[in-house]
Structure formats: structure tokens, C-alpha cells
Length: 496
Ligand code: MV4
Image: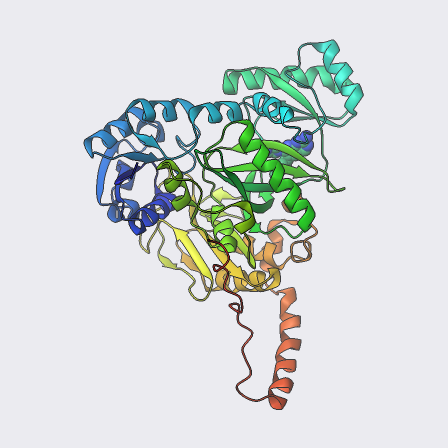
């Protein structure tokens, strides 16, 4: 079925990003907004806009009934949930369908399987996906917990089945701690999620977080769009993402990609989804969980594949088969994204909401800024303090890092503190530039005093290069080709 009008049940940069693609496809757009977002860009950009209530999320962007009624009122055919808010709410996906509307995302049944970590693991187990050694199901009692712990060894990790994204996890160093930590984890899980089920896994000490983007249509075709490296995180909040990962070999990429496709098949997935893996120091990988939504960091995948993931989601929701097979898919170059938050990295990343007195985004070749603000706008206190995503592409990782540093330097924001200086610190850090880092990067290397050091390790290299450049230019003809990025078109091999 051809979709003619989409209601976007979200706000900020992702609402705008979805509407742009809809517009390119000739699809009308409807914005919903809270009273705090009356003057925001997604409201102005949409063809129609409906106020759905009070600034508090549970009275606006989480108010499923009001959103579905807005879709009816505007005669929308479909709802795109973006990320966060209702995007992984299976009941909402069901209600949208029952209301005669298309939910642009997976089926509620896939969301339910993957929303519960234990059912996700048992679905994956049936498809022989590598899992972290641990309990096969919820921890039943004291004796079975001790038996499992002895089998897998310490340290181990207790996780809440209803958790995810790091919520409700506890490390257990030895048997003395086991009982107490299980009880703590269970009561925490019960009060946080209403479900006390916990399970045990071996604790992987210094992993990398690698996730695979998948696309699945309603005809049973599933492909992967390679990986994203998301190891640079702070308190389970991703800060920097890149594609490809500097640590994967082509063989490992193919293997993990094939596993991700199997995970998608294990829950009859459709639409765009992400399969998360941990990679240990011996390059063993383990399936962790699946995110059943479009992710914040999806642009790095778009930059290296030339695809528009929202367009693919919409085409899949319309019932079309994927227009490519796995063999058609190639990636080109390297892409990095940094998240620009209104947070003060010198003050424990405290949210710093306020007005963007100066707001000038970086421009130029292979720089993309996905944001939802303009100069003079105020960042509302009610929502996530992300101002923008800054994304670059380059022919290789070093080019992308240099471009990112340039773009960070070109970004001008005053009025609120941002994480840009922190992102510059990461780009310049030897552990990052060498590719030799883990999920402990921030904990291992960052302290606020590091932000005053602005000299790049590239500065020295750049100085050497400029001397070399001068000497070679004297020898070469002035028409010598500049070292541009576009020697190969990234897009020509992507589509049949
Ligand atoms: C783990 C782990 C080590 N061992 N599981 C954190 C979020 C959730 N998706 C799973 N997480 C982890 N699970 C085992 N068996 C370490 C983490 C973890 C982590 C994972 C990915 C990215 C950043 C992280 C930071 C701390 C802990």
C-alpha cells in the first residue's frame, strides 16, 4: 500500500530527519508537539501540526491515545515513532495497527521477543547464535545460582531480564557476594520493571560494543548493513559512533553480519533493526540484545552505504521487497558521529539547558549535521539534552578523524556548555586514533582537566605534511590532483 501521509510521533532532530525523507518520497507529514515545542523546527517543517499537550513526555510524546487520534484527525496512513518515546512499545505498535494505521517499524511480536532479554537469548539460542556463557534462563534459586557460577567462573554479571541498556546490572566478584547481589538485583528489577527475573552471565572485562544494522522486509528477505563501533560510551550513553569498526576483519564482519541476520530471522523481524554484540579481547563475539527501532547513530551507516534507512523503512512498511540483496551491498570509506549534548563535560556532564546565543553549524565537504535547533532557541528541560549529531565521512579513518576535528572547531555554540570539547579530546586521544580502545575508554582516560589541552597529536604530523607538500609542489606541475575523497563514487555499486 502506498503511504500518502505519515505522522511522526517524535520531536527534535529525528522528527525532522524522518520528515525530510518523507518529503523526498512525495509523502505528506504531520508533526505532533508538546506545549514546550510550539516553535520548534519539526513543527514548522511539517505540512500539518497538532499540539498534543503538556510538556511532560507522559502527557505528550508518550500519550499513545492522543497520537493515534491525531493520526485519525489528519487522515494519516502511517506513524513513524523515531527512537525513544514509544518506538519500542509493543502495545503501541499493536494499537496503531488496530487503529487501521501502519506502524513504521517491526511487528509487536518481534518487539516483545527482543524486549525481554531472556526471551531474546532463547530465540537466539535456537539459531545457534554465540551467547555469553551463563544461565539458560532466569535464576531459580540459591543452589542453582551457585552451580551456574561455579561452571562459568567469577567475575560474573547479574542482569535483569526486563532491563537493557545497562539498567539493573551487577558485577559479582566471588561467591561471598553472590547471594546478596542476586537479591539486590531482583528487588531492583522488581521495582524498576515490575519483573524480578534476573540471569547470570560471565563478565566480559574489557569488551568492545559492536552493533550490526539489519534491514528486513515482509517477504522474508533480511540483509545486514555492516557494523557500527559504539565502544566510546559514558554511563551507557553513547558519545561517539563510527562505521566501519577499526577492529573487525572482513571475515569477522561477514560472520557477525550473518549472525545478526539470523537474530532478525529468529524473531520474524521486519524494518530496520540493530543487533548488539560484545567482542572480547580474543575477538570472540556474543549476542547481547536487539534494538527494534531506528537508532540515533544510524547516519554513520547511511554515510558508508549511501542508503537512506528511513526510506527503506517506509518502503518495507508499504510492503515492498528489499531492492538489493546482501551481495549488492558494499561500504565505502569511513564515517564518524559525535553527539553534541547540552552538558558540561567539566562538571560531571551536568545538563546545561539554556538559550543558544550563538549557534553556527560546521559546513563543507562530507559534513552532515542532524539537529533540531536554530540560533536563539532554548533547549527545553523536559527532554533529552542532545542538541545535534555531527557526522562526517572520509575516504579512510584518519581522514574522517581529521575532518571531525575540523568540524568540531568550526562549530560555534555559546549560551550553553556542550560536549564538543570532550568529543575533540576523544578524537585527539592516542587510544582512539590507534583504534586500541574498549568500552572503558572514558573511565580509563578522561578527566575534566584533560579538556584544557587543545594540541592535537596531528599538529606535528600536519606540520611535517605541509613541508613535504611544499617540496613536492615545487617538483610537480601545478595541475597535480588534490587528494580529494571522491575518487570512487560510494553510491554506484549499491543498487541494481
Ligand atoms: C555485559 C558486559 C560485560 N559482560 N555483559 C551494558 C549495556 C547492556 N547492553 C549490556 N552491557 C554490558 N553487558 C557481560 N556478560 C559489559 C556491558 C557494558 C557495556 C556494554 C556495551 C557498551 C558499554 C558498556 C559499558 C559497561 C558495561
